[in-house]
Length: 191
Image (spheres, rainbow, N blue to C red):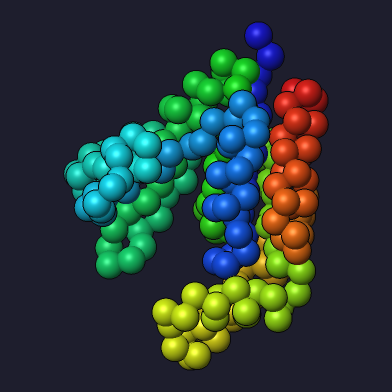
């Protein structure tokens, strides 16, 4: 059996990566890599589907025993990370696995799995990203400006890292989805 491929998809907040990934999963046979977290489950979430919800002790054991592909402690001391075993199993079974993650997480994954596919989703321009971030109407102008600054820094970091060798511009959602589907189909054949 041929080995599968890991497709790491990243991009800043507001670029549409989650929407793209959801559509790509519907149009391909790729699987989604479910993250683990120590945060409490929210209404409507399903353990093992949205996240693997684990205790802090379990997560720290996963760190200590090398059972995470990457991890970070974020937002109020909660852990988030990618369990290694489901990714390895999917690839060993010839499956394509999609990992939707932030730039820093993708760089950590690259340290362990450099030969995989790293895709950066970017906006067509700064103005479009600013409109998307501000269009939510839930944040102050200062908060939107801070998120835009962080987004620009993430894009700069991803580009300068040399890890993200494929860029998809999300100017038109349907075109961006088709581009990612084409990448997955092409990469799955090249394994």
